Image 1: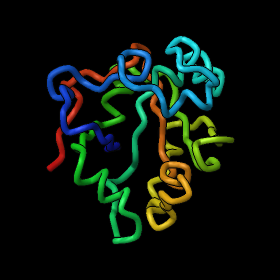
Image 2 (image 1 turned 120 degrees about the vertical axis):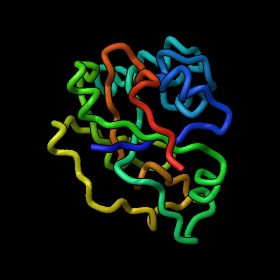
Image 3 (image 1 turned 180 degrees about the vertical axis):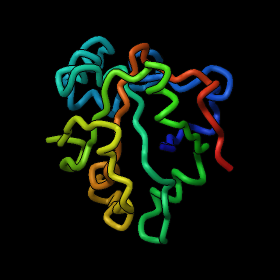
Length: 165
């Protein structure tokens, strides 16, 4: 099963792989207000309190973003990032996956997130709700179902990753 991940244009994904929050030093501000701290260790602790292993997870989608002229944030993501994919089955076969979680909703700003654990065969491949995205209400991934693949080592090696054109 092919899953997708968007990364900033300036990246080393094809050389170094995809890293979870626990493995990188990047701006964690999007999580600070929910964690109640800007300290990385506090943020990681908060993440893992939502479900075990979240800080070692890679967020992914079951399809590429479909910008239909509805919200400019989607076009900004498509135009301003690179799209990568990986085969979940390969990661599972090589015993790299600890668990899989679905985030299917939250309030604006990522508050009151709704997660549930799934088995690989339970991943929903039905079309995503891109038409519900509304950046003026801070609703992006809050209204688009996506998955968090918890990795035993917190990263996906570049050998599993394909750059999409």
